[in-house]
Image (cartoon, rainbow, N blue to C red):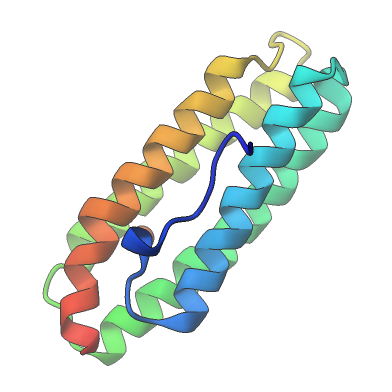
Length: 130
Ligand SMILES: [Fe+2]
């Protein structure tokens, strides 16, 4: 069984956003698996970097969509996205300076953050898309 699986209840009612959330979930799974089989910080570090790039793209598309539909919670939502990027960037900096070994806690943090973000913040904008 996968560490993290997308569920129908995560749907925000937009196929593209759902697909992008599924890709992020897959990346978190990859990160988890890399650590589980002891692939160490090199591989895990690459996955984190890949995830940063993908998150930047995904967040900006999501924000564009919210703007297009006149979602009033956009600025608060942007703050959430920014806080996430700061946190993940912190992981990357620590990896780069060799002062940090990725652990299961990182995978758990990412899983918890994304699940909560989808269910609370993304679900909130999904109402205006309908
Ligand atoms: Fe979001």
